[in-house]
Length: 114
Image 1 (cartoon, rainbow, N blue to C red):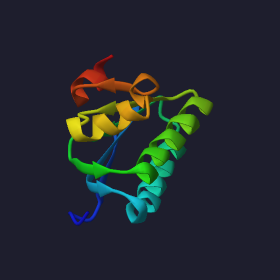
Image 2: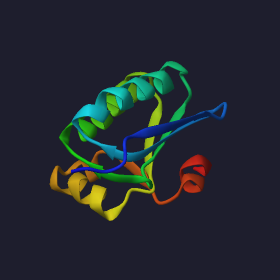
Image 3: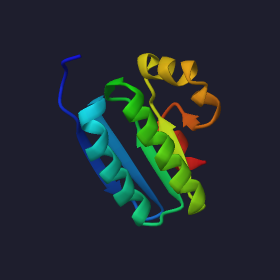
Image 4: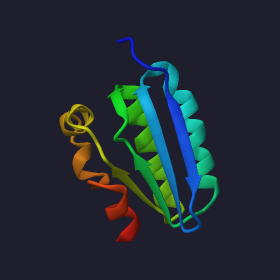
């Protein structure tokens, strides 16, 4: 699937980190996405928010990267929250039954405020 290359914005807001990937997360992009998520985890903030509203497509390596980030967050007692998940990406989570494992919110404001 040819689409836009992955770009990832990273914002440290003191008590939380916001990671915003934009584009597709598939085999080649998963490695760079994993590095950004590790950088977010290394800050030891109580909350990591991943804004997926601009992710057009994600396959197994992308999902596996998020599962790994969730495991790392739990080990460090941080909350990992997915926000803005599109229907196309949500369908992948539902097929894998991961929508019951991840904490999800509709908006960044909702995830940052609770």
